Amino acid sequence: MASKSEKIFRGSGVSPGVILGRALKFDSHNRFILRMHVNDVDEEIRRYLRAIEAAKEQLKTLKSKLEMKLGREHGIILDAHLLILEDKSLNAEILESIRKNNANADWAVMQATDRLVHAYQSLDDEYFRERHSDFEHVAERILLNLSGKRPFNWEHLPDNQIIASRDFNPSNFATMDLQRVRGLVLESGGRTSHTAIISRGLGLPAVMGVGDFLGGIVTGDQLLLNGDEGQVIVNPTKERIDGLSGRLEAFGAKKRTPSPAQSSSATRTQDGTAISLRANTEMLHELSAAKNCGAAGIGLFRSEFLYFGHPQGYPEMEEQLAVYRRLAREMSPYPVAIRTLDAGSEKVGGSQDLTKQENPSMGLRGIRLSLYARDAFLIQIEAIFRASCDGRIEIVLPMISTIEEIWQAKILIDQVRSKVRESVGPAIQAVPLGAMIEVPAAVFSLEVLAKEVDFLCVGTNDLIQYMLAVDRGNPQVAYLFQPLHPTVLHCLNHIAKVAKGLNKPVRICGEISSNPFYAVLLLGMGFTQLSMNPLSIPTIRRVLREIPIDVSRQIAHKALTFITAQEVYEYLTTVVAKLVPWDLSSYAKEIAPQNGRNGK
Ligand code: PEP
Ligand code: MG
Image (cartoon, rainbow, N blue to C red; front, side, top):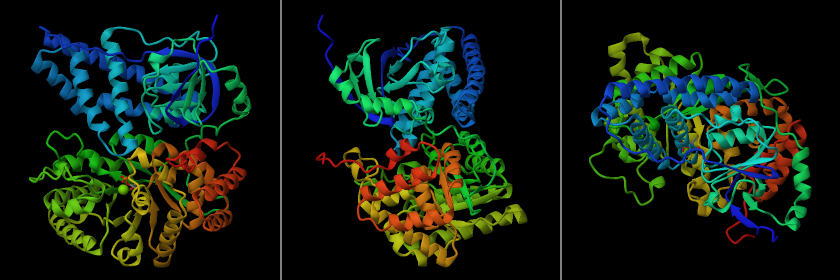
């Protein structure tokens, strides 16, 4: 009998490792939900509420299983799902939709979910775009409960399975037999999805975003999954397998970083230098993750998420106040840095339609928009000052490129401060002001700008984009987005030096903070304050604790002598890997320079 022919699929390698296994096609949600007319609306509402209650119970159980199995920081991911279930406005929207339309709960759930998924999918930032899957996963659970079906039973799986699915709910990791499942291939998803994050944490090779994969395979097909290169080969030839045998064995023998345990103790390097690790957050439900991961405050609250998908277009003062208050109270005694709106004009209900800007990342956004749509800015600042009575709050101004922007913002901020002081009296607290340093112009006028503010936040995501003229959301030029580009390194080193000379606190807030190799480099340059996605904090803490400050300085010094990103990469990954006892290879991949478009 002729052997089945080999087929090659490509996607993004979101968790490294090369493995051979058998495809297990997993149909997580092949949804087809019809709208039906229900006569007894009250009973339909009860049915919905029962499904929600059941979902909460299930998630709580899954969460404790996941924590026991993988460590506390992974259970936190399900907190996000629980918070979505408990979201008052989402529930109200669904109940209203059932009532108003005499509709079945399943349809109402899908309507609300589709709206949110759509809103999230249209965001520029990959990390936030990926959050759409949290809503889908919660809806999937509610729909399962409404249907009365039982969840997939993971028991008695054969060995060596590679899950092949459109999407994968991270709660499945709680019940899945990790001895038998060896990898994951998904048609959807990207490296910042929760499923990708957990896969990396588990050392489970995964390739995501593999278009039209499921139609090309059947359960039982042999798969050669290459998480290093983002490739999946269906029915690989013997020569192909032999060619990769070294990497197959090497992967089998390696152990990834053990799940770092939760810790609230202060972070210090081996020789006692204090390091502050804060969390970047966008929504309230991430607060528990920040606290559980031991964040020393919120380093960046991306307030634009209060505006995205808001029915009115923008949140009123009271609504913002409630959020900022909770942030301040829950993080107390640690500080919370609220970044003022950093989004396009569509978020503030401006009369002019400025949403169709030719080049939005260089357009009317950030502080430019706040100074243009002043009323919205004044409302936001008022909410921030009012919330200052409840904890330690800081303001950060995004996209600063001129000193005048800071001056103008300060005049408005002072006006609001006086107004709020009149109404709340002495309870109002000092609110330190910071500037995002994320535009090259701000780097080269740093001395002047820094003197106008209390602290600096370096937004490396944008800084790299503008320094290297690479649109951070454009996959066509993703290979040029090189965090290790020597120019980026020199730029960061310059910021560290100027800030030190002025004795100005400075915090790195971009994605690079969450990469352990990069974190060592930043430490060596003199950055002792980092802010990152909450789940990365335990790993960064663990790694930095291993590094003597002098050694990090030597590493940074040497890294600054190279003239290509590739040289920096090779040096940095080799030297840091020798200093820590865990396998950090998957993190190396995050910062590896990629081949150019011509494939050289
Ligand atoms: C940045 O630019 O690095 C940053 C932290 O902000 P954002 O990713 O929201 O632009
Ligand atoms: Mg930015």
